[in-house]
Image 1 (cartoon, one colour):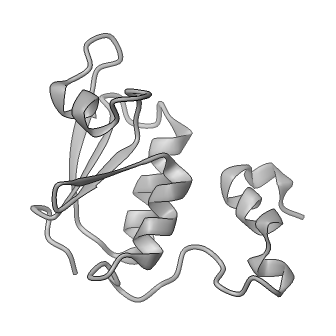
Image 2 (cartoon, rainbow, N blue to C red; image 1 turned 45 degrees about the vertical axis):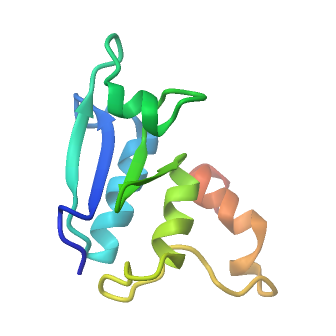
Image 3 (tube, helix red, strand yellow; image 1 turned 135 degrees about the vertical axis):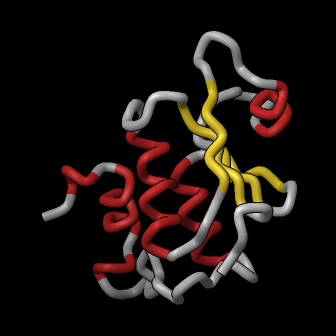
Length: 117
């Protein structure tokens, strides 16, 4: 299990404001990984956020051992694939690209839950 010194998640200061931040938080919880939550203010973005996501300057950003991962779907993929982040071993996204559950349509369901049938 990763310690809070290894994983940091930049999100909005008010809980529940961003579904994208919530997705990253839920993925971390499902995998059983501990992390430090760093709240951001929309009006006054921190130097850490600007350095971690210099192009878009938006949350969520997961920082693992000093390396930032931006965008919630990329964070989910990173949590599944990164060495040392197995957590409890639970996979978040489908792994088989051939079966319908592993298709890009199902990954779209991870982005837009309303698309699931």
